[in-house]
Length: 307
Image (tube, rainbow, N blue to C red):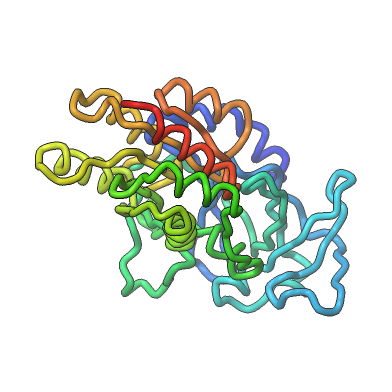
């Protein structure tokens, strides 16, 4: 089956979003281990095209090529995850993706098929599996282990620019005197959590963190039942194991003790389809990763609005 034929039905797969289900494109990187990427982020799967590589490119970059009139970078995903590089392998495939409003290609050994996974079937990987921070979740597909690639971690290893909030926004945060109000940061990516915590630290806002929607909901329910300082706002990723951001938002809106919480969904997923789902589940805002000033400004606006 060609890459184009495989992805002809992507729109039907994305209808799973909002129901704590996700469609994964499965591929391999050089051995029998299965890896996955959310189909909603995949534009196309191609045979590896001729590429150009300039001196000084990052070691994980296989090169660049013209994709529909635009030059995009190609990352050797095999090399990024510790496998032998695929840069010079003629039979390799290219997965063209869109993350955080940018388009890039990833070299993979081959692609398999699309599978549907429930949030409950995805779980954080044990450190004993040896994936480290390169994998954000694992599941079982027909008895075989599937590892979901933490693309944010891979991209950050190539472009690890610090996240800075402008001085103007920092001054606004000081004037609002938000402390001791706290933000709950929910994200399964260690890179994303670190970036968010650092961003809010620049605004003198304390954070509580959760690694997925289930953990976040448990923390919120426990805090609501205690006299602890309440969370003022939730900033959550959408793609997460156990309970995704959509399902977390729905659960917050359905719980009498939590429904007044402000919720910002902050994701590398983008597009009109996603924004419609954000409205449907009752989130206050959607911010595509990663726009520091826009996120910071949104947080200031929402924290200034009484619950």
